[in-house]
Length: 298
Image (cartoon, rainbow, N blue to C red; front, side, top):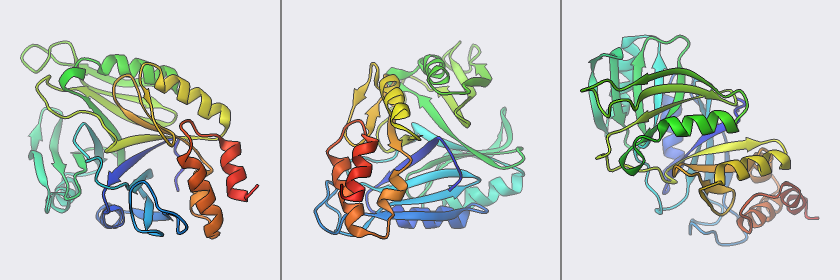
């Protein structure tokens, strides 16, 4: 997997394998890199069959994703979409045709002030993509839309994220002018954190989409010190949850995840995998040493 400190996680009921295969086929160079399974030895909170697929890891344009079979509790919505910058209008057209099949156009393909060839489309699995021509090389960036009660908080969120993560910087920022939208608020901003480009915008207050666990952002931590630091910073004013999940003060869902999770949950040793999974279920903030000990059977 391409090294990324922040990895988007897409929550599906039971479609993770099909969705990952579709994206790997649809996006040039896309590929599935790994999969993990629910324990064979015990039931799981999602009530999925024992030994069935838990997560699928994939890469698109060097952007890592996790597809999760989590059950019906959450549904993906456009509050977090993915900007896809590609090299040509022809590639926008090709991707739009593939992604719109069985899906829905949120903004039809065409020419807009911000791009000669642009479209916003929700695919058959509910994931939203904003396609725009003109970038080389092709790239993907998660886009956070602060809408409804959170409209107007994009600038505050950008300031927080660029403070919390290393290498934080604002790359581009444009505000709504009079008549364009909520005047003075963020129309489009790109910012970098921990080597990852993110996009943020303020949506209209009447939009009925809100951040939830349907799309979360995994923070991959190399040490317990990193786990502790990101957990404290991101959960401040927010809401901690189980298994490394939390919501920040803006309602965005994050997973604070030790990088060892991939090794623990994809091991060929089924008993070790099951021990690590069971230990993780008992935690809120992850304990790296305890997870490693459970994996090893200590």
